[in-house]
Image 1 (cartoon, rainbow, N blue to C red):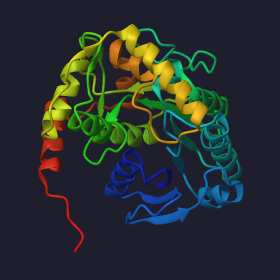
Image 2: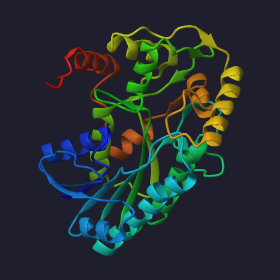
Image 3: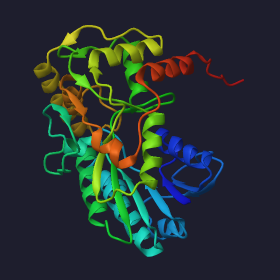
Length: 325
């Protein structure tokens, strides 16, 4: 197949493109900076209509990962990258006669802050989603699924807490805080959470390119819920840094997160804050998902279990980082 992958400079986008290339697909990637992959590459803004139309020309399928992923920033930034970018991709798919669009979303689009225990993919809810990222992704998912038609099969896939070697979003931030002695548990650390090893998330997206299912959203995870305290401990152990130290009651953490967010907004800081209300909720409440519909719809199962994933992460951290001469 001829497949366009947007956002291939990120960990999951790169892994997805790698797997498509490895199975023999003719892959083109589109993102702002070079990804260094052995395939055709288009550089530019995902909201650039002319650029995206050129990239989509002649493609059989598009896997759309490009997005602004952060916990700070103005709505306009998220709207341009996540909402306008998705609308541009949808329009380009229609114009170019692309038959398949895999829209990569997030479970946060249906998370209003309460525990999620063994649930499926609830409907995206921009009004209830927490923060600009989740709200913008909820709007984008609804727009993408609204374009589902006999001529363009659209499937929204929501990988949950993707991690692996080279991860700069989740693992690197946890390791940095643990190394500095600033990684407490929020609450008891006993809340069960799902995570997804990056190779499994990528193989699910590849399966979504081929699947017959369309017009719906699917949550993807390893399907191995673990207490959040255990996940943090094992991530830290893989990086050879101390695990979580101490615990902060959830209510206190939530209020502190609200204060930090207000301070960041007041001073217009663009760095990642140490705590937010959403982060407090994620670390203190359960969020794990029923994977039966996902696995049936995609004819897919994860191939790397958590134990093997942690082993691979440990090996990655054990390799010395090259230093400049």
